[in-house]
Length: 89
Image 1 (cartoon, rainbow, N blue to C red):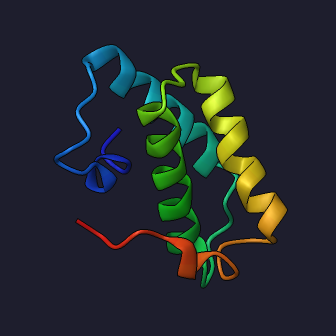
Image 2 (tube, rainbow, N blue to C red):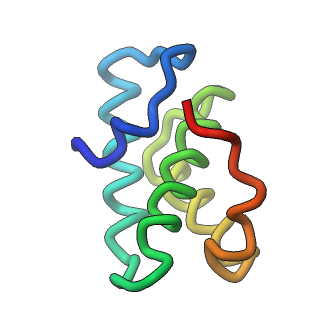
């Protein structure tokens, strides 16, 4: 559960049920990432995407996971979308 928490921003507050859904979605989506040069970036992209989707109202862990993975597959991986990440905290 702890891996997604560093990506939460103070202005984004979720209840405990939503947080559990975010963590479940993140863990499932991140579980398929092979270790390598881009692994950390890919995990961050997935976490930020899941949080953004939840902020817009999505709460289903399966859908959150699928949409986060879809973003990576559409872009060809993390390297091509690093520039699109919002600045950290």
